[in-house]
Image (tube, rainbow, N blue to C red; front, side):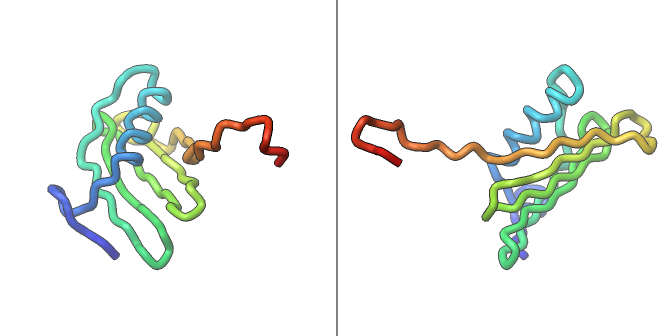
Length: 103
């Protein structure tokens, strides 16, 4: 397990950006993310973390090797049993096709 960073976790720009953008889409506006504590479990290529989205409890998992993850956030504050979920995957940039590439 890898730990480090300002709050005892690690920093991953991609996950930070995805978290902010996804929460913005979930709640229809920019949402302040705090207490984002992310760990990396290297043998499983797994990022796992907890955060708060304007005092709502949230969590994220992301498998780095297959580039797929899930974000879950309490729908309301104070938290109840309603949760908003979002699956996400990293978009892989493919080369621009040309006439000489038949595949």
